[in-house]
Amino acid sequence: MTETDPATRPGGRTARVRSEVLAAVEAELAEHGYDALTIDAVAARSGVHRTTVYRRWKTVAGLLVDLLGAGADDAWEPPDTGSLEGDLVALNREVHAALTARPSITQAVIAASFRTPEAAGALTTFWQDRYARSALVVTRAVARGEIPAGTDPQQVLLCATAPLYHQLVLLRRPLPRSAADRFARIAAASVG
Image (cartoon, rainbow, N blue to C red; front, side):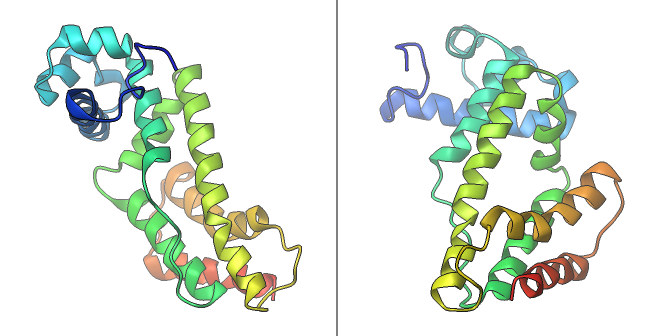
């Protein structure tokens, strides 16, 4: 990290400014999309002077990269319901809620990642982090004796979640939560 990297000082004014700016980025992106996302709009919404935003993030891509990087700073863990099926259903419900929220920051970030290589790289890093954390549902299921040792966590997770992204993001078709639950159950049954 460099001295101008907003993540180098975790407390005080720097943390407050970063939090306010990233909240503004999230809101602007979700409400207006990538094309309307500007440093001036973020500065106005966050109440942080535009010079400060330009100095710390330099570009809209820099704002997106930091927003996605902040996802690795959270304490999110996959749910623990006591069974693989229950964990996958709970996980799919979280994904479904994120993709069907209006406006959906998840869909907005995915769309924006196709606009700049920096955002694409940051989104890839974000997904790698989420899949690594989500692997815990498979690890717990193996430890409980529900599924065989050596089961590939990413394969199980993709089996459960990919249909949601395909329907809601790629095809832009509605998908009821009951269908998200069904895909989770199919994934759990496929490794039992």
